[in-house]
Length: 143
Image (tube, rainbow, N blue to C red; front, side, top):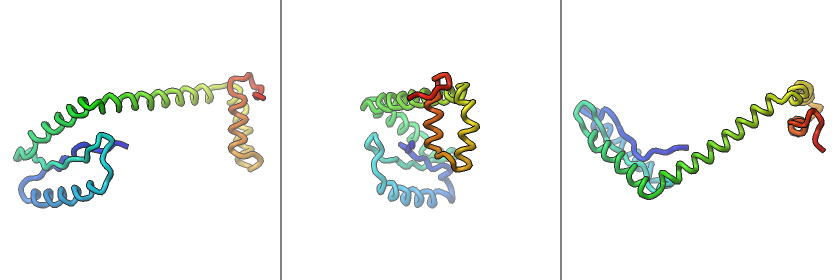
């Protein structure tokens, strides 16, 4: 799950500004109860208003500063490597699922095994083991 480096309250002008400031204080208190992000920081809370210009420059500066700090610390590169490993795992899983689903022998055995699971004569795990044993073996279960 992703978590925020910065949270911008928008439309913090006019009558809404005191309410936004109160909400900011309340959320800041709640954020202090959470563990720090993997980068070691907690989310920053900024008040902004496009109408009055409140906090707009500060928000841009904070985003740039947070990104620069993450680059300098190596956090961005570490996170990208972790994401690359995740996508590798996902690509392998998807490729295996496609190959498995398209396997002629698996497809031939699947309806009967699904029915056996449905009527309770076979457990889902036994049926899965049977299908996996038939995968890419020419229909002959592996020993």
